[in-house]
Image 1 (cartoon, chains in turn orange, red):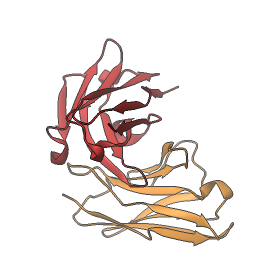
Image 2 (cartoon, chains in turn purple, orange):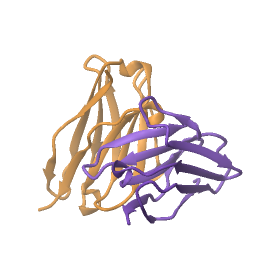
Image 3 (cartoon, chains in turn purple, red):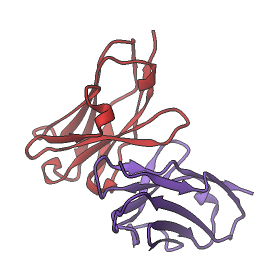
Length: 107
Length: 114
């Protein structure tokens, strides 16, 4: 199975700050990675697909990128509604696997 | 508008089975894969498996083989997840999602308790 090592597990940041979350893939997954956002009520939304494509309606402050086996989600300027949980998901190879998640907290 | 409406919360006894539903609107499930994902309380997400409703072909994470069965009814545009021989380890919220995880259901809480 492909392991997705997501870091950090939690991050304390301020409004307006720029932050980056990372997932490292244990094997080559090409561009087959999504970033997901989960609200406290459990609602899950896809933000980024195929590593760097922004989903329709997602604010442009969110972006995705890749450097080798490291995949990053960057939020350029944090807003209050961004302080929720984030997960990466690789779909290159079955079984599909998720990162362990990052909880973004308001400092 | 694409929507996935999942069935309501379930309280089931250990050893029993449960069947969850996910009814799609705004698209035809025959045109896409449908996935199921598990999330235990305060834990991360786990992929259970997926179905191609056009032909019924399924693929599972091996750790859910024998535990989960995914089916689909194209006439009602609904995907199903059946969980068998339930234990406390199966207490979780279960989500359905479309191909590429573009759209998600609201989740169904399954609580296994005597």
